Length: 307
Ligand code: CUA
Image: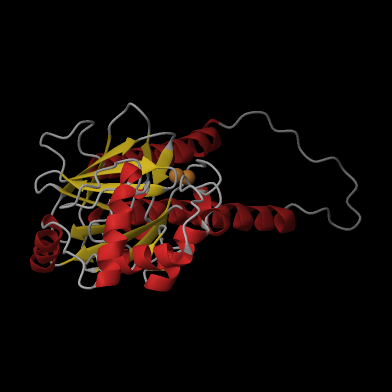
């Protein structure tokens, strides 16, 4: 694991390094002994006698069984100790800070304390122990951001928990790590780790309802969004669109990418996506609608303004 950025990733890295050091030491010992025995006990010229037949040697047996047993016991202890640090309890003792719900093929991100729901771009504060609750809305997914430590499955009907204590701000990329369908490979995770003050600012800006469109094209887009099928699946806080099957779009314009990192968020990409979703992300649950060109332009213009 390169550049671990959380307490959990540090501990796992430490364990991985210890296993590597132990494995390297064993490999070195085997190579040295094999080489030494090959030279030391080779057949000399003119010597055609059989080698001595030796049965049993208590001392050597104790060493040969004792050292590997001690090594295994040490690695077992290390594993338990790291597992305990990474997952201190099977169930957390306080409500979760974040609830992540896996969907085919995106991530719902819910901050229960502040009634903020967003998608795909997971903002987290650094420097404190977070409890993340992991759920699934459909099939088994798996959360894995390598720099932040361990994986966790998201299983329908089950609540799993992940503890996370991030050291430093940054963008950390991960991916769904359990095959979940056609767009599994494009179920990326983007974690934006921020200093607590920046995180709170972000959270506050996401608590508010969507800003109303600034121009006529935007207003047209909003009207279309609310009366056409969009509102059945997507929510835009502060409007009549309250669907929950698809990602919350209240502040989609402020997220840097759409479709879990597949495309940059801009008007052109939003329009392309609305026009040909099945060409861009085949298998995603976004139907191909037959919108007129100017309707698509209005919708994309409206969505891009949702900051
Ligand atoms: Cu979700 Cu693979």
